[in-house]
Image (cartoon, rainbow, N blue to C red; front, top):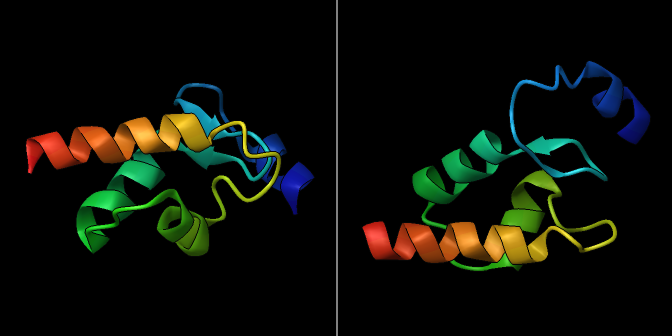
Length: 70
């Protein structure tokens, strides 16, 4: 599954989670639409941050930015 998602990645959009091929816009949409507050909530919805975990800091920054905007 991971390899298939990586192959489909066009390279034009910001890839946040390389383990599962989750784009920044996908994570941002989930955060906004579902009012997610934690990286664990994001991980449960779209698998971002479940693999190696190196993207969790980026996801947290996105969550923090959404909190400031709201």
